[in-house]
Image 1 (cartoon, one colour):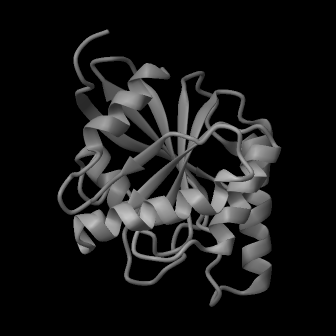
Image 2 (cartoon, rainbow, N blue to C red):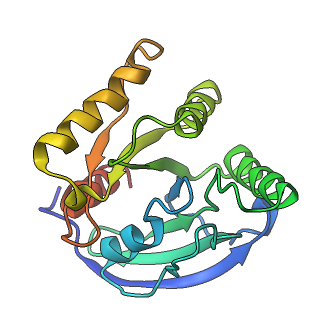
Length: 202
């Protein structure tokens, strides 16, 4: 295996409402999802080093479709998927239910999905929405990893405490813990480890 993954190019392909509308491209797929305002778009842009590829906004809940991006790298091509966030209280209930159906359709039918990266705001106490979503992924047998965001907003000791607290809140229910990544979109923390994990799963 070559040392590190070098991203050559990344570009938007298509937005879809349900899985049967997703691009018919047979490539490994890696999806990103999390509670609204977790910093998902910023993390995606940092990962591919393309500012503005995933649309960031001060208003949470802006990702409302299944967004596919083609990523070309020196280790092979793959698809990055930006999924609608969950748990934004100010969205209409009908919208939240629609986004939930959208994600379920995607998880049920997308056979080339290699991993779902579940984003967690490292500054917060363990949130029921995150824990419930993780439990759902486990129950349905969908491979996932935890990505803690905004690590630059806290001191190292506080970050470690927060991650351990979250892990302890779920460890009693899981025989084996998922892969865990610590990231900062601002400083680029965790980029190499995330890309290395993706490379291993291409």
